[in-house]
Image (spheres, rainbow, N blue to C red):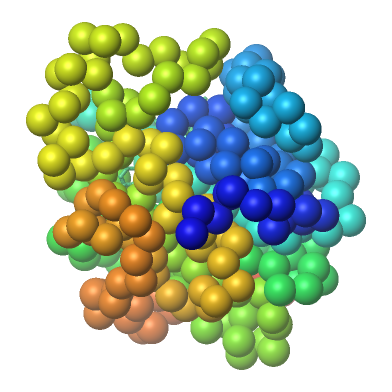
Length: 312
Ligand SMILES: NC(=O)c1ccc[n+]([C@@H]2O[C@H](COP(=O)([O-])OP(=O)(O)OC[C@H]3O[C@@H](n4cnc5c(N)ncnc54)[C@H](OP(=O)(O)O)[C@@H]3O)[C@@H](O)[C@H]2O)c1
């Protein structure tokens, strides 16, 4: 079953971060086709407008809104959450992400390493700000988009911001592992608080633009790009296909909190499939330490009293 072929999400409101491009765009398009009101959380208003125009050209009755959201800047998040102006939030899809390749360690406005700040701390803080509206919306969901890159990484709890050993690919993988650890920990905490909000972790496999269909005017894949991408299609898939696992985790009532979903074929491509998480992704002790550190760095804790921010 395709989870965006019916109107099963009619009446629901779903926020998708990084919905103006890549996988997030296709998540927004597919959720709009399912009847949900989709809020595109993007840092560039013009890009969000173009994405909404593109979705409307394919889903004429799409219900869409944009909110400005820069996950790298913790100070921008309260305003973004206020701008939601929604009385319910059925799901938030924590999709936005960056993978830097250059050798220089870049910093966020709060002087945290930029990938850790954007992918992990920004989403941690966003969920903290959204906690009141999420926990008062019946059966709401937090969908964390992790990565297969987290399989081979381990956190260095003594050096979370990669101050002492910065390697871009590893720092990225660790930021995704941090997101996944928090996604599973969040579900445990929600259960402990008696909440019916579910936290579900997904990963999209390997998704390439060259295997992704065009969505003019937002994104046009040339014939040359398509031909170049063909061999990779044996192992990987397009961003439209990667979005399907995320959309299923958002909408399928049979998927419950604490589960991990990814694509079926080697976890790299194909239909949504429930996976068994590796033990290091669900380790409660590591997650508890990471949660405390993240609370200290953001000054926020969704289920505890706020604490003052620590200096990085
Ligand atoms: N593609 C893959 O093979 C793959 C594999 C594993 C996991 N993932 C994960 O899947 C997610 C989507 O990946 P993708 O391939 O679709 O990436 P993408 O095409 O590069 O799109 C990333 C999106 O995140 C947004 N973003 C980046 N920094 C942001 C910030 N500070 N505030 C708000 N939004 C921000 C981007 O906005 P701008 O346009 O403004 O930059 C863009 O909309 C990411 O979390 C990634 O880690 C992807």
